[in-house]
Length: 242
Ligand code: IPE
Ligand code: IPE
Ligand code: MG
Image 1 (cartoon, rainbow, N blue to C red):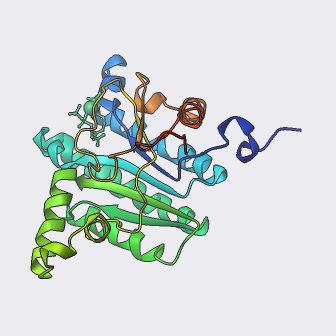
Image 2 (cartoon, protein in one colour):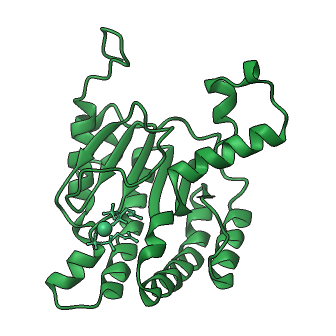
């Protein structure tokens, strides 16, 4: 009998919070003589099976980096095309995610997004707000530095005294403040950088970089990343692995 993915012993210690930098859509398309938007379409289509896999495994928190504050530097046609693709996918997938007990979160700013995309994000947040089985954050128009600055502004506006600002109180001002620190960051597409993703929450993350381009990153590749993670020794400055 085929073994259920969730029971695979190789990936016993799973990340509680997994963040994914889904990079390489453009190069994937270029290699095939296709437009960059075709690459984004293929990339976005790739999300579904991977979320299903992580859901089966019981990974509780997942963050997907979909659009950074720096991605505004791209040509307008690519940005609007990508927003259109994202708006469609969020609309199409949220019902099924809701049935599976997934709560969708958005991190970043809604400002500057097309009104249709804002609408589809807000509808997905509302539809899934009571779910607790799995939390999925879409980092869209997101920047780690902006997140920290936004937190500082809120802290000042709340009139917190300097001696009340510590790591625990600070993190409550971050966008998805109920999310734990990131355990594992996966970046596809070969670059070895974090491109402004969750700089506070990744201070002690494990990193997994792969040259595989995002649209080609399938369940097998994901499993490889999870196995690599389960073999890491995390000491957090101490001497024993935790
Ligand atoms: C990732 O793919 C998607 C976004 C950043 C929106 P890219 O579009 O960055 O693909 P490459 O890096 O150009 O191949
Ligand atoms: C990072 O990819 C952002 C997302 C995947 C959304 P980029 O392609 O924008 O990153 P850089 O420009 O290579 O750092
Ligand atoms: Mg890129």
